[in-house]
Image 1: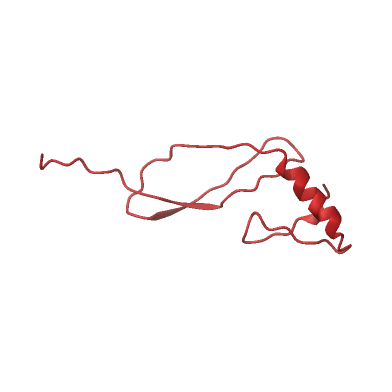
Image 2 (image 1 turned 45 degrees about the horizontal axis):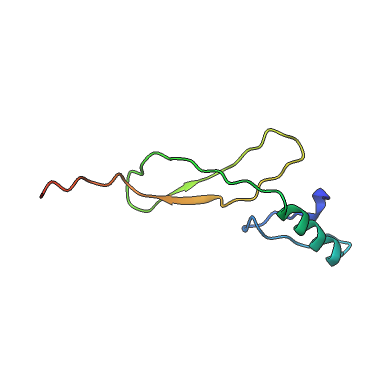
Length: 85
């Protein structure tokens, strides 16, 4: 995969053609990328207020690897115990 194939975008999943306009090559690259993936999960601390927007960044310590993920998520405060029972 050529680094210049990727463009900075608001959408981490968006791919764009490089100046060669090699659509077949771009599709092949996308298919190759789809073959390797992993799922990460985490347990963030509760938010201070409802629908708190937080930034998210995934860093990989291996040169040449790229990550594609959402860059923000919404979190909620800790649920309050129902004391009426």
